[in-house]
Structures are given as structure tokens and as C-alpha cells.
Image (cartoon, rainbow, N blue to C red; front, side, top):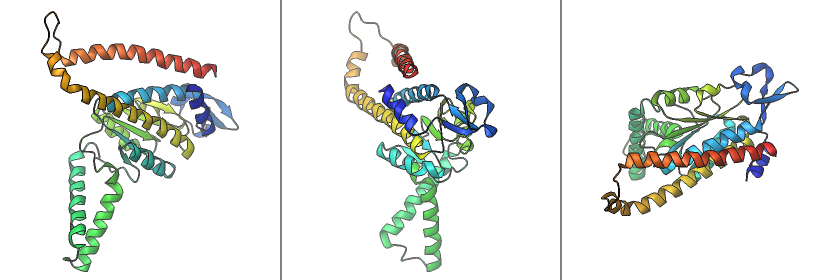
Length: 282
């Protein structure tokens, strides 16, 4: 799997960075070298960040939280809309409105307004309004739908943000950091990796490279949903064991999850190290 992933990333050109004259010195640990004035990104660091991001997204979705994908640049719009819709996750591809996270209540009120306008259109197609008012209402509906349609089913703050190009989406990243929402970012050599909790160094201007990253992260979302479904189906049997049997020590659910997470982290860490070493050998 690691070999095929590396091959896909290389074929997508994810290792091509920006011009050396416009780089961010904080990206030095992720740069392999320079060729013809273009920085070459270390593919091992890309795979390492991608595997870590996949593991985190799987656990986040399995815990019942959602992921929001952000990418408003032209190369990312179609790719994000396609992959995010396939896994039924939220996305913003048109424009990030300031306060989408920090002023989430106002955003939800605008989405309720969109539902009202759509109900009016469905009932009488604005026939009860004047031509001028109909034009204003239709224009308002199109504007809200264009900017917020991807998050209309996001009724609570997401558990993680996946951002394409931190330079372009700085407002979204800073809002997430202010609220303590983890961020996973595809960062080119002109970006600041300190803005991301999990940086994935790579070419954020290539549609093919963005497609590979989105494909892998959405696979992690699917795995997390499967784990969530298994947990929910097994949850009715938990109360009987929670009451405790003779000779068993009772523990709170929080303590149990802490113990489980420690074991999971160790095994998953070994898996990541094996994948990274296999990638380095290839």
C-alpha cells in the first residue's frame, strides 16, 4: 500500500514546490532540495503527514465528530465538492465568510433564512410577491446558497478542519485555532507549517495532487464512519456490563477510553513507523 501511495503522489507531482525566491524558511525541514529554481518537497515528509492525518481523521469521525474541508482556489473546488459529497461531509469552496466558526450562530440563522426562501419558492414560486421583491429574494437565496450550501447540514462545530493552501485560507485556520479545532493542512513551500496542527507538505496548486490527498483523507472518513457504526450497534450491550459483575472493578467510561487510547496510540505509532521506513526504502 505504501509503495502504491508513494507512486500516486509522485505521479501527481506533489513534490514540486514553489519558486525558491518565494519560499517560507519555516518549510526548510520539509524540503529535499532545489532544482531549476524550484524547491523539491521531501516525499517522505508528505507520506508521514498524510498517514498521521488519516489516523487522526479516522479517530475523530469514529468519535462521532464531523470534518469540514476548506479550499476556495480554483484547482481545489471541484475536487473537494466531489470527494466531500461522496462521504457526506461539509465543505466550503466558494468563499470563507469571516466568523463562520467564531460566529456560528449567525451562520446558522442565515441557513434558516435559506430554508425559508426555498420553502417560498416551492410553495408558490414567489407569485405572491411583486417583481422587484421577487428579484431581491431570488438574489438573496442564490447568494446564501453559493456561500453556505456546503455547510448547510453542519449543525455543530466540526471536529477537524482540512485546509488546502494555508496562505489563501488564513482566516479559516485562525478561527479554528482560536476555538481549539484541529487543523490538517496541505502546505506548499510558501506556507507556514506552524499554522497547522498536522501539516502535509505538498503541491497545493496541482489538481491531481489535491485529488490524491482528498481521496486518501476521505478513505479515512469512511473508515471512521464504519467504526462509528460498529460502536453504535454494540452500544445497547454496554449498560449490562457497566453495572459490573462480581469480581470486576468498575471504571468510568472516561477512564476506560483513556486506557484504550494509550494502547491504540502505541500500536498505531508502530504501524506509522513501519510505513515510513517502507517509504524511505522505496
